[in-house]
Image (cartoon, rainbow, N blue to C red; front, side, top):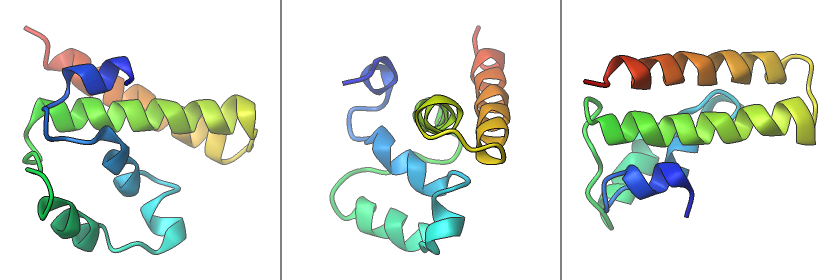
Amino acid sequence: MCACAAVAAPSYDPESGTVAHPGGANENELDVEAVRRGYATTATVPSESDPCLLVGRLDAALMLALVFLSEAPDPTRGPAAADHARDLALGVAARQP
């Protein structure tokens, strides 16, 4: 289990956060709402305002940034994924007391 998953809501699977990230839903033409509805049949889906959801998205964004910057370098996706991860990290930091 990754560190981000350890702080997420017990019923939240951070891997599902990748569905809503650039490079996931758009390229694969997934219906994000249908995925969330299906996920909700087996677990409680956090609300959009739940900080655990933001942490799960940051976890997924960091993974994608690492993939596109080092493991499978892509000159377009790499910087975009890093920018997205940075924006999410700033959002997480802004929520700290």
